[in-house]
Image 1 (cartoon, one colour):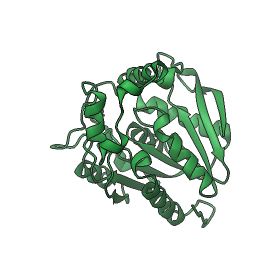
Image 2: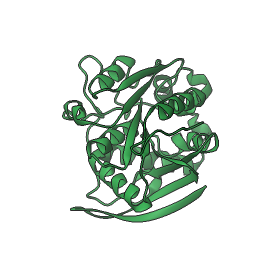
Image 3: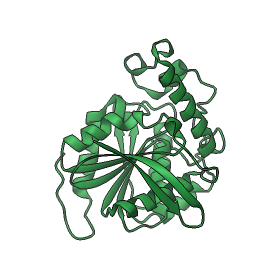
Image 4: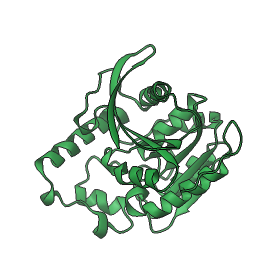
Length: 273
């Protein structure tokens, strides 16, 4: 595993530094974390890298984990533009982008940019759209215990015990929440224009959803998939909002199945995870 800070520049905006974890070798995957921070995908990144021919690139969204964030970078579209520049910096092509929660939102925005470097997106319990009757839960007023109950099929096994946290962990959580507020822009965690814009996505898309997700329910996920032309929808049983933590084996198998099925621009490929 290698951790590198890259200095990038978004055309029309300005310079920004992004910290990136890179591991494994082979087919490239860009793995985008949700509002809980990069630690929520760290274990799955290692699993994806070690279980097959996969190069896993996991950036920390600027502002999360106490990393620096320029004032002008405050939107999911801005993060998508940043990761387009990161893929170019790394010279990566035929990339499958996996995003959980707001990471899925960013992945969708990245697909909408139309970069040829992305060959498919996998949206895992993504947020960002508005669906009548199926609101995204406002997490900011919730205690850690309340958030765990809504995030996991079995919160007793994966819940957070604030009393067991170190000061550094509490500080990191506070930094993550502060950054999430900046990028969300409002407590609903949605962009009213996104659902309609998803119809312009042209790369293959898979929408994966935990059947026990109470942050954004399964019907919300179905609406997400229906908005993307040709997207597939798949439920993960006994899983909540964070499959990469709660049922990583099921998530890995779903990713593997889809990666095998997606045809690379230069011809067929074979990925064994």
